[in-house]
Length: 266
Image (cartoon, rainbow, N blue to C red; front, top):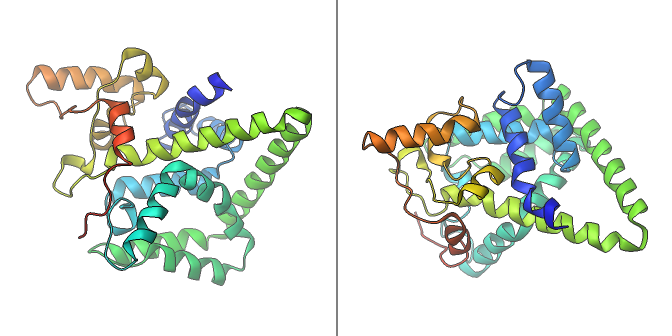
């Protein structure tokens, strides 16, 4: 369990590199390996790739601020939903997302439009792009295929674990929690006037490789086409030039701080 859980961000980091076309130089091989890695993580590659690239384009828009309470939902419900998201809810949502591709297109588009909303200056564009993706027949077919492969693979794994199946279940749960925490962390409580609407963090050298330099997330948003291996040198150069983005907090301390503050209203 330990290496599988500890290396969960590395697994996601490899998928992330494939999303940005940096995992392999050949485009088709890059996508094929990224898709395989996503299937092994029970994630829909097409949907995750689209969502991540939209996140780069519309960072901290209303649909992308789970830590901000807009005042519409009762505060206690909003806080419980936020905590559940941190404790693996995001991963569960991504695992279940392919089920929408089995619904009639009009139902899927209606559900996606309602979930994304149209608030904010770019809200209508964001909603339109998400609905367009949800209704694309080729992407829906690939998502259905990849999800069925993931279910077959993990179903087989549970079968062969036999009486030890709870070990696999706990491992997958912990991996999902880590993924959910790490996804929210770089943008947690970040105001819209923060550069790239993201933060960098400090982390020990060993963990830099495990998280594939995602602690330098603000730099990644500033230079999204650079591979993960180029970020530390870039951070050092910027620091030497006196223009380094702030790395004001330790990575794991900030991860736990996500549980302490919630609910800043627009």
